[in-house]
Length: 506
Image 1 (cartoon, rainbow, N blue to C red):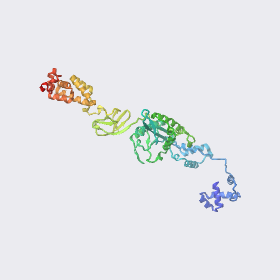
Image 2: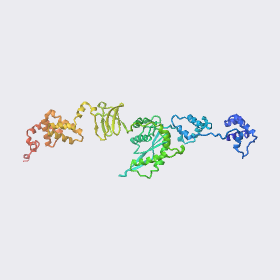
Image 3: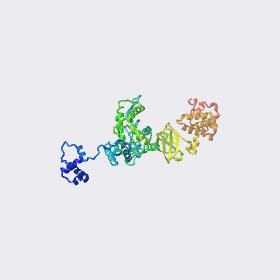
Image 4: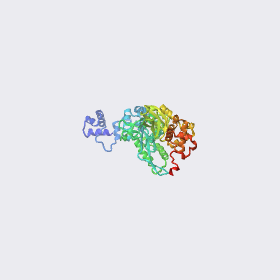
């Protein structure tokens, strides 16, 4: 009626022609002419009296219109949610809507137009189209939560991990010991386990645990994070630097978590990370079950069950295990270092660069994408894990000389030789060092024979000098031969060549 009144005002007050009115109001001239003719036929004069009913004027102008036949508008919230499901189009929804309401339904063009107008007045985040099961937005909260050590009173600050699905806003919250690599990856893994499926895309912020080098177009993603994505069969798409609108979903979720969860815990004192996560878990359940006004009272959990859950990919058959990847150069002793422990690789790779894949239980070494070595992970610092198959032939033969075999060899030579070997083992800080020294001692058997070696060891022990250089000097000088011919005086210090005796002082 407002349009009709404006046409009549321009016609009778402004004295414009039908063509001018059509150009001003963007209405066809035939429509204007028909309206003016109907008004003149009623015998009414312009302007109308102030108490004249506009409804009465409408019925007089268009007496054949059926006012009882009102159009039934669909639930635009429901339409918006349905469009998030894969394969659902506006045409399909309009056909279902028309089949339900028949002649009272809007035409397809008006259906699309009304939906466009409805979306235009919604919140900014509603304008982004998120398909079901497509995107998981991930970030850390700014505030941290203190955890007090009950024994020392030391305070550690726990980081709060937040992830939310694009279509349903279903949210996961977890407290981590920090934003380090292991905490980040394991929080991602536990989040996907919580969801019970895997979305097509993980969209993190540009933190160092996820992105080595941020870039607007080609970010360099951390190798460990790429390995997690390979394990779950999904893709990674970090947001653009300094563009928080790229992850508006999780930014809103972070704000809600800070107000709904962290604010409620501000007066609580937590003495362990597990206790903090238990409190967060209970509030997380409440958050996902809260009705949302913009979705006609539907909760995140209900939307997740309706939209995202059926569209998620299944979880892998085995759980994710945190894996650390490092690049290392093979040392001359054909070992690579990881976490202050050395692991062997085939000796032909000396000087080559290899990739180390480390889990909590296993160390694997790759060269040109091929696994060339694997060892059980050892947490003994500054030790070696060596596979004999990786050693050169001469080194392998040397490696076969275990402490037990060396002692058997020394026993076969004589008891004093064995006593010397045991004394050498006690004097060394590492058994490998003792092994090398003992082999140097026992190898003198080939040159001097068992009897002379036993005699030299006996003489060295009598002087409390069971040292390899001393024994070798005794053998070279032949002093062991003189000692062997006079066993009765072996323990008499007065016969020692370097003792001057009592007559020296007379």
